[in-house]
Length: 417
Image 1: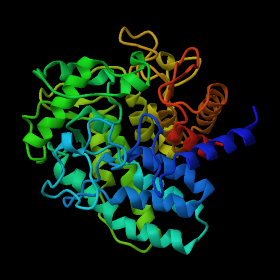
Image 2 (image 1 turned 180 degrees about the vertical axis):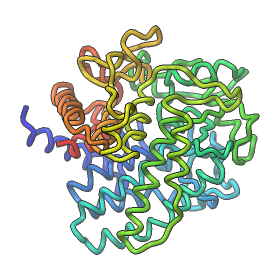
Image 3 (image 1 turned 45 degrees about the horizontal axis):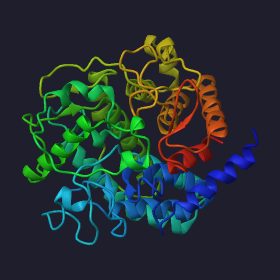
């Protein structure tokens, strides 16, 4: 494997997907700025150009709503074919929505503060980077405070999502039971994703009917904070883990830049401990006892947040995090290979994703499990070297699936290299 050539190709993809300060995930399928995609992109840009990395995050914050939410999409007005667009979200002119850009009405996993900390560390004292990130800290602080104020309906430190898209793991098996309760009726929409990418690799029509119903439901509820009578309201264990880490990273970032912010990390860590490694349906109160890679993201963060020494000395820390259920030729599958719901080609129902591997690798490293982290990092790099910079991969054959020349795959391979 020629690592220098792999890094050069990753850099080329980032530059090809650059749209003047923000990076689209993939030219054909995803023509806008997505929230967690952009944060992952910044981690890669930090290696090539820390100033460009800081700008990536600043561009994401331009979509912030008055209440503090940073949405999952900031739309490119020149790319009108993507659905649902801002008209379908009914956010144009909506109270509290940004006036200068058009956005969706939901959020996505808050990776941005973690990315900003990494950018600062790699900037080598660059004053321009520091100035950009210093201006960003209040926006990130308001976003994190929004989660506490509006997305913790039980008050125990668990992040509630109102749409599967907020999780970033759209058609994950963990949502099946909650979505099955929804009768969407007749929902008018068009989709182009299954014309650009093999439909066998995308969510089904049944799932999309419910996705669009929930888009309309947000507008019907006038984008208000969710209540326990929502049609879909899930305490998301991976989102809670990501926010717990992001809060700690935001505190480090703010301190390094001489800024002052709220202290919320322990609140979300307590919520993560209450959830364990599985989501909870807040409508029914039931734990969602479904095996999904999101549990590994949560477990890795939970162990890491207790500190390396404590993690190694406790039963939870000494246990094998990635047990036999997750062993695949090309780790990590999103669903165990022996699970009846496993579909190795279909989006978040089986394939391997580089960003999930990166999150687990990061948690393992912070927990002091450096050998296991290195093993997973090496296999991740080998997978991309063999099959290219794809959106996701078949965990058994390694075949590249979904969109081509995918931004976060390029960015995170640069980081892992």
